[in-house]
Image (cartoon, rainbow, N blue to C red; front, side):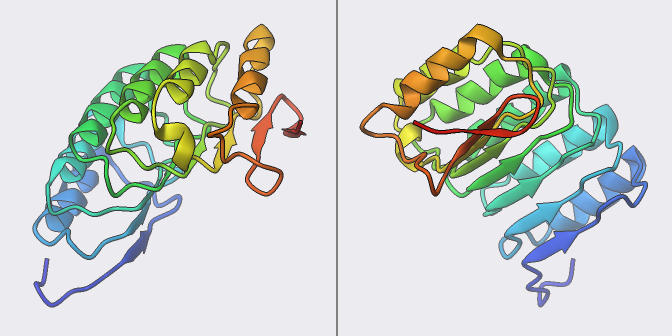
Length: 197
């Protein structure tokens, strides 16, 4: 909370952070958010109120977070809506978002699409390993119909049973605006195979 604090990266991996502790942490960050660029809270069960407090931080106009890592935080479809609503209100700075190993499912992906559709969104890396996703048609449609495809360089969908919608992902890769090349790849399928044209 100290105004002289210029912390840019905060990693609290697997720290058994509770919802109450998340409130204390985010309240402190909200009082001095302008320097923080990376926040990693993976392997903590934030719960409904924890996600809500984090979302309040993300909505702060002074927040310039570029990388948010929340894998394995037991984030639900409902919590994903709260989180993405916050990101929609302040999307221009975020470059990397990792929600892997959370059961956000197709509904959560649909909420993420609303962020990608925002013209201010410049997300470069989106990681959604093992999120219970079975259909990426809404995601691919959002990428093709917005500017998001011009910025996105990495898309990770491994360990999701996306089935027939995989073909739509291949069509996206053929788009002339697509930056997902051999260097910046898409990872899909249960064995984390690389999809290349």
